[in-house]
Image 1 (spheres, rainbow, N blue to C red):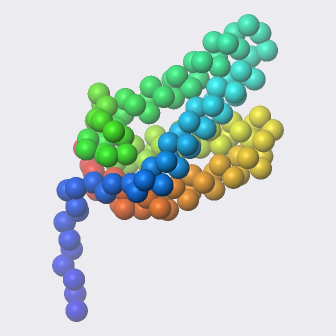
Image 2: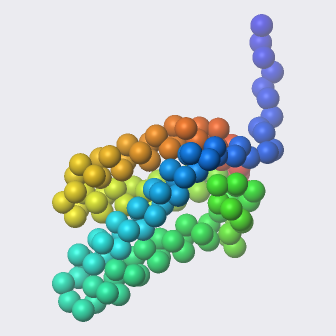
Image 3: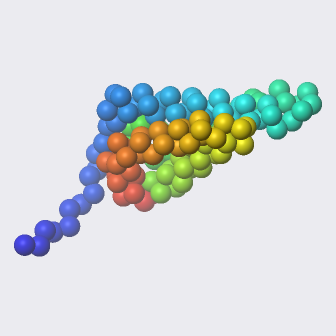
Length: 136
């Protein structure tokens, strides 16, 4: 029997508390890894600037471009974007953090971090599906 296509859910799924805590830990770890990479980037006194600027830039992007009504974001950012744009931003954010850990010589930690990011998105598959239906 053929099932009619269901309309996308207008209500965003809410992350369970454990996965929300994992996401928050991943975000903080990402900012720390980016800061450490920024420190290693410059061997001069500029390292203090890059240590702060790299994660500050990433955090600004993270908080600026959001999907309206996404409960994982806490509140709407000033620039609404589609769900696919948000997912690309999140992939770049977490991907850069994993790469930064690898570039700093922490390959095992980078791999574990990437695995935890994949675990988070697997557990948040309802949110990913919901984001994919947000077109503007």
